Length: 237
Length: 135
Image: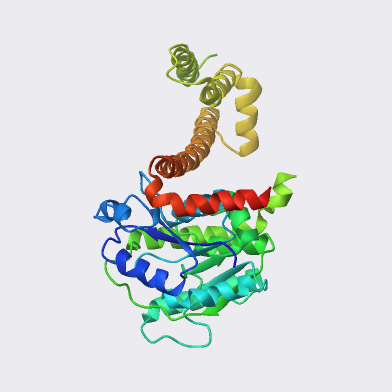
């Protein structure tokens, strides 16, 4: 079994973390767990040492992209071969982690994304969000030449190739669409598998209207510039 | 004949030049970021002094009938370049700050691993095993 680390990005998730970690332990007992706290302002910081897992706390809030990059850097430094990213709010069901791991373990993918839309139409997604996901998914499918149905999913599993590439190059901010474009540009095999997503256990989304518009503006820019950037190997040369 | 606008441009460019040099002398402005302002001040100086040579020709070529108006255009252009160069600097510093915060958090975690063996013994053991097998 490959050494696997479950990275849980957390911002103000004190209420949902204990339940989530219990479920992750139950469903993926062979994996280690790392919580990366994005400078939470609730009781998360006080809770971390009592959870019995590894944890890292950022001193300033940097956003999901930096949080995941920190987790990946820790994983690479400690010799892990697979990293699963699962959100701290309980949206992603730990019982589906193995669905993401299977393609990595059999070598058929470098990165696996849990999609709520593969093979089914979820009933609880608001209509506007569903429309935006559909539109963005079509655009990303066109650019990356791989099927993208859930372009903002935060349920990811990274194999060794992706891990070593992203330690230095994981994008900042709300990174998912840029990450898809970056991985495609660098020739990694990215696939989606079907997962059932839940509503958050507690708390609210960190996406305020201002952040949403900022993320959309960034995304439009990334759609143009990321495919034009040189690949990592080429820029090293 | 020297026009008032030329005199103002001349004084402004000399003032800017002196101010930048003084800020560098006092170490309030590092050399790296002073160059863009020095170039602006010198360009303004040259344009103000050599009106017939540069400004009138440029204005004529651009269809500007009042050449001193071209001076403002040149000024706006240099301010635009300076602003853009500082946006690049701010972006780079933002990336550096992000990396520093990440690095500090990773070092903090490493320090905890070394000083609090009770919570980390299992993972450390695995780390040693990994290193052993990799050699």
